[in-house]
Image 1 (cartoon, rainbow, N blue to C red):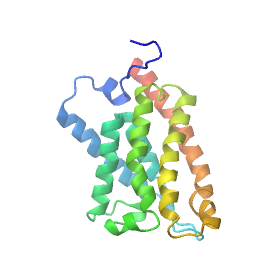
Image 2: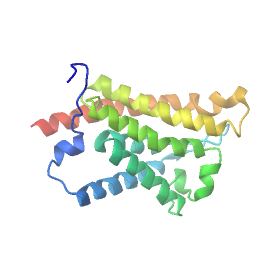
Image 3: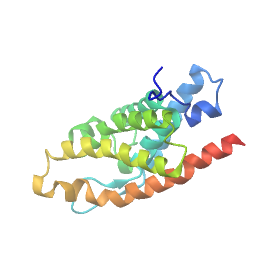
Image 4: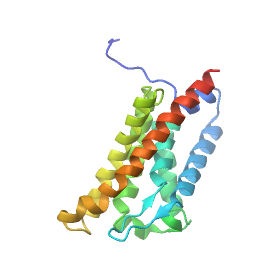
Length: 193
């Protein structure tokens, strides 16, 4: 084995529940999809963009960080399915498949790779210290912005794309990164006791 190889570490969920079952994993995925839906209800419309400020990304990124790549991505995918089939789970209680084809569709599609990426980083221990937890959240947000801006570009001129789809959301992402920097390492410290 190479010394440069990083072995996967347990996520906070794995460490808290080491002898869990498939049913417990399924409940964790469901719980994180519902947490994401709850976070999505925090929604502030902005007059110059069709993309609202929401808490949705907090739920998505925490799902990956807490559950790991597969379960975190599954929680994000389940959240999308729930909203798509008609549960009022998208931002501000919106629902339906049409949202995947509108201005916010790219952001929605970015949730699954963002949760997966945060899960991979958590498995490498990025959720254990304040600086790396904050960096993990910001990198996960980068996936959401990448997909989101690509989707939004179909509805906005290139000259206004960043003003409509990126800049207004940076302060919120910094706040979420700060929250992760406090809560995730705190969870590990509490678990260690």
